[in-house]
Amino acid sequence: MSDQPIIRRRTVSPGHAISDARVNNARTQSQYQPYKDAAWGFINHWYPAVFSKELAEDEVKGIQICGIPIVLRRVDGKVFALKDQCLHRGVRLSEKPMCFNKKTISCWYHGFTFDLKDGKLSTIVANPDDKLVGTTGITSYPTEEVAGMVFVFVREDGFPDSDVPPLADDLPFRFPENSERFPHPLWPAAPSLLDDNAVALGMHRTGYGNWRIACENGFDNAHILVHKDNTIVHAMDWVLPLGILPTADDCITVVEDEKGPKGMMQWLFTDKWAPVLENKELGLKVEGLNGRFYRTSVVLPGVLMVENWPGEHMVQYEWYVPITDDLHEYWEVIVKVCPTEKARGDFDYKFERVYKPLCLHGFNDCDLYAREAMQNFYADGTGWDDEQLVATDISPITWRKLASRWNRGIAKPGKGVAGAVKTHSIRFKETAAGKPPGYFVEQIED
Image (cartoon, rainbow, N blue to C red; front, side, top):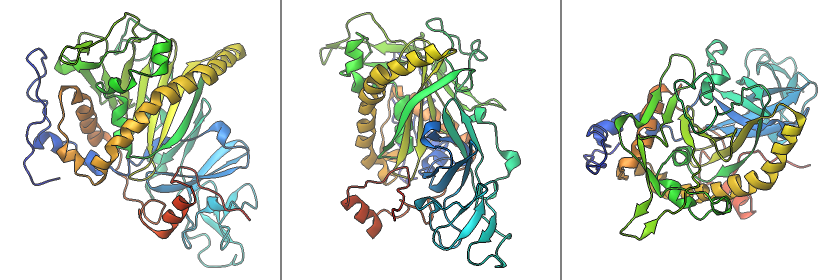
């Protein structure tokens, strides 16, 4: 952090009852220093890896999360995950998959072969009696598959199996078990990935910027402005305010229960937040009454939940999965409970024709370019000290402090992986060939 004194960033008009304690001065910033250190993400957490349909039986795929290369293989329906970096000389196993049986995966370069269940070195193709066999291996990662999504617990080497938390601890707050705690009269309880008959439809794409910038954008209550001209807003005749301002210190509830997800719930569309409908100086005024009411919350390791969006009886989840310190995989998922095949078909039909093109692409495309517009300011790490925050930024400040307290580990800069060094010949070669950095490993063709 800079040695220069941090001046008070946030000033609030007398009409808003936010206490003087909520300022972004040096003391406040010191409370979220771990967050500022987490450019490569939070380790020892559950992250989405692929949609179930993206990994067929006996298929192998390589990805990277928090600077850790991971290889996935589905065998007899179950997904296995190992470190995608051969311990011999660092080759990615997924670049040219080689699997001689259902129990192992082999390095295509020198034949080092690893057990899918635990990552142990079980043999070497041309050197089966070498003394290294059976004494070492690569890290394995627990997996869970729910509602058409595959999740991987991305952990540090040596993180014990006994300490792996349930997937539910890294997913948004569930209802109706939290309905009394977080009541809302305008819509029914939001569905969860873990609900019976839950269906998750969505997409993921690589975002060119740091995951923290993307995550904060999701619950930034002043950024609604970038969506004012979106097609879905006008097609549905929705009314979105210019912004939403906090009116009291308790406008956000921080959840730090011993068990379950750690995160925060914003009390939007209550008297704890005031919608801004007019800016007289600029001659702007929001007209109409057809409001699209919603509520946002976020939990570790960085999962946004937007209730009642983009329609009734559904919820949108977003993950901002760190790939490197300047790339993330942006997951946009809409969840709905579909108890019948007809309900599933109707949901799929509307998703493909309305929600995906107009919401996930049209609406959220604005978020993508807005995040990229901030990346240069934060890229060298000084932006966190130089930003000048305002009353609305109570949300990111609260999140930063919460995440600093409750993350299970800060990912170290990638070592020997794509993106660890920004300017080397391979990256230039791929860029020149029209292959920008991304999430999935491109496999070598014979």
